[in-house]
Length: 69
Image (cartoon, rainbow, N blue to C red; front, side):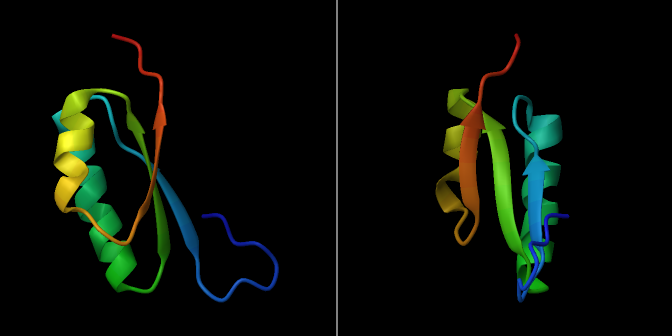
């Protein structure tokens, strides 16, 4: 958990891209944490499946990272 000094809510980074077996559980955990007041940052791969799955996701920061196939 990333919690800078003086921050008012926890910041959570979730690395969850690359395969559906990692992406969808990561999204589910992110949604729960978001509802509990956390700032969520998703780290996904550059694959189209990751970007498509995130189309209905709101309220979370997203960054892409290169993935090894």
